[in-house]
Length: 246
Image 1 (tube, helix red, strand yellow):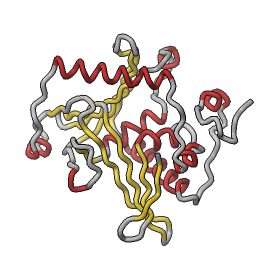
Image 2: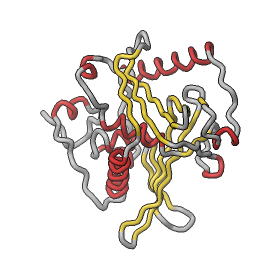
Image 3: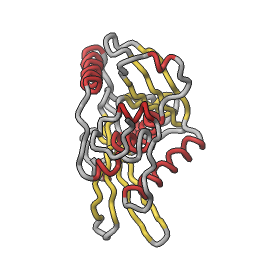
């Protein structure tokens, strides 16, 4: 869901889950109006099976691995490798934006699949369990919504409790940031294709542009653009959208 509230100072506050942000800015901007109205599409069998696969991975990790508690000192010590349990961290991304005389806040919240730091590099890994692996075998880059998701997680603060309060969240010190998008077989949980890379200046600009446009779309300063892709449009689950290909 996407909500627009007000801060104590009277500024607009746009709140969105990471998944709804990525679905809007990585798939189709017309989804923003649906989310603002509280309309969510029905779950598909693929989504249900993907959730089950995530749960299987979480259970397997709990049964086979034990993670050392991470201290405040450990978060700051770049010489110390750290790793959090799968789906053990909630994320909080907040920005203050200005458009001329208008100021607003943006808060995006989510839950990362896997967060760790190795040799000074903060790494976020996100797992996907598609219905078909064929389209990934010929791809050299992840889809925009997948990359947006990992970039947001990399640039967030974190919480083990799920609290969205700023004081309840913490930073993870790092020298570099890297993302991994792991495409897996939903039955065996084995990797089909792994996309990975460091957070570059180009990636930062990509994220910044998406965030700015999202905020302007949410407050009605810009009109959403249709994705103009018949295949993607037909597979969209928002059946009441006025832009539907025949």
